[in-house]
Image (tube, rainbow, N blue to C red; front, side, top):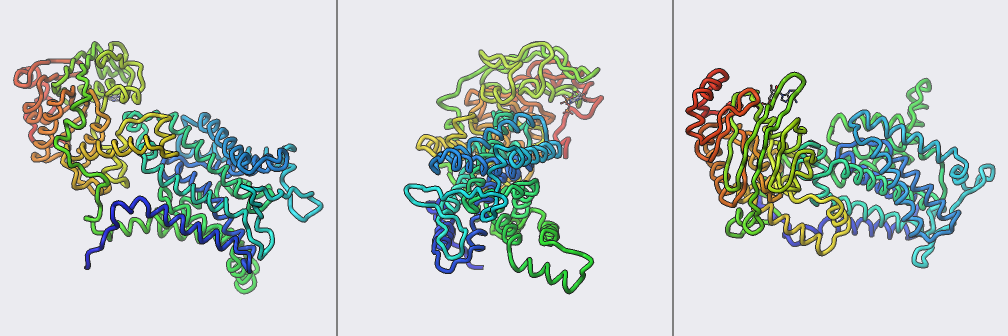
Length: 639
Ligand SMILES: Nc1ncnc2c1ncn2[C@@H]1O[C@H](COP(=O)(O)OP(=O)(O)OP(=O)(O)O)[C@@H](O)[C@H]1O
């Protein structure tokens, strides 16, 4: 097979914006041409673009954050009504109307996100479904809003046709008559293009990547410094604002509001568009939205339905909606990841793996010194008399230990001794029941995990938690310092400083990957890696936040002897940089080699604490291990 020429790295970031600009340009030229363009074609294109803004926002929720919301149709309706209000009541300029129609649904999104913050899965979906119904009822039946729902040219209903707004002195004519230039479609197409570019930009930033982590594990997200509560509110609000923009597009295309358009089915349709196209992929909603809008309005579908009624059966009436539903079920049955998702998976199977390249490679001297050299603040961890009980089980009973900078402390002990519970108390999974935990001058107890992470605590888990579809680089990048507003604003509107920060983060990722020996696989997706490599990705992710304390829960579990030796070398290098390292470990060879101090726990208490040789020779330790397994564990307990 001839070698494929990869696109030059310099051009790669421009490929997608150029493609979007090209397609948008063609759509604009076509719809504003006027001569002979069919009204139905213009309305189809306008409707696809209007809905696409909403479905792209929804993709952030469904595809990225794993939150299934039926309220997006309701937010679109709020945007449409708010825009029409500003036009008919205030005679406001177009951009003012657009801003109002974005902000009001975004605020409604905040309300719904706050109300549903503790809900997940079906419960969340149900509440958003009810919200969609309530929004529809209020808008269509409450008089102040209901008056905007009308049908053009039907005097019995009165008419609420919106006068064409003007933008920069340019009248935005809706596609109401065939053959006229539909100038109103220009902003609608531009807004759809901007929504796609925003999505694409957002998901590559630390802020956007954190959404994928929330989908994977909220616990992990908290441990990476993400305030999950605020981030979910932010993403629901952003998606709702985008739905509002979609509503403006809808009002511009049809120049009036037809209340039944915004009924519950709209929310259902929007979510189906995302899933059918391929949730989590930028092109998913494009394909899904275009396919469903086309099918719903295509004359060929109507003809088929007529043919079915006339020829096959007049006893069974197959509606266009019914036919589309059948088609969708068939497509999803064949392609569970949606059209784009399944195509992407096929492509990945076929693509030569060498094509995956890192965006930034490491060409410095010492990656450990890059990450920790200048800014490292040696910090001592002091755990003093902490306790934890689960019902009647005392998992941790008055445990005290200290990790001074530039040392590795290992906690060993038989299964169920309370080792992981101590780690969980330090990282904030559980609240301590008595005792204190301090890192340098900072008191950690009572502080949520995301703040502990920002104070310098980084940890890995017994079983690695990675986002399988993301590249190794992205999986590590998400460990970079997470701040709330700054990173969101920088993600939405790129500034020179946010760009510099992103470049710096990518360089840190390259350094961390070099340090753990994974530079070669930086561009691969996490699910292409071996188990041992996945553990090292977790370690790299913990390192890019430049922690002061590194806590590792059984880092050698599942690794082969060569990988364990490599891990030992990495940890020794990190110790050399002044880090305080605490690890829970069952591999005694590793403990013997690297631990400066060993704490053996038995039944929730510290039984012995000293250097490795002393602890491993202690009769209590020997008998506790003999009771539960082997002390000289050279193999892998989990294998
Ligand atoms: N979430 C929980 N709910 C109830 N009991 C728990 C929970 N987590 C731990 N325990 C109990 O607390 C005790 C200590 O468990 P822990 O996982 O801390 O032990 P460990 O030393 O880490 O064991 P292992 O080496 O098997 O990981 C055990 O009796 C365990 O059953």
